[in-house]
Image (cartoon, rainbow, N blue to C red; front, top):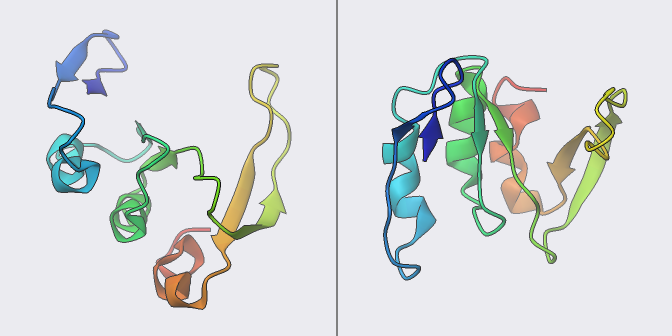
Length: 109
């Protein structure tokens, strides 16, 4: 689902069974996402090439990491005034095969 930040109403919704892979539909859902908008992904979504492309377009991506995902914190950002936000960190994947597609390699952080 994409939410219009001005009206707070959905502007695009895609409902499928849980069997459908997020990576197949994510690009469809993200068409038209503009710089400075926020894309929120499910914990299981780890298509870092797509996330990197969004980052290059100025889109902020938010996700929860999978438990087995190995990363290191590159930079701790200042805490937000909103107490519901526990941490704001820039992270880099530890897996050497992931290095070419992490944000520091694609024009992000």
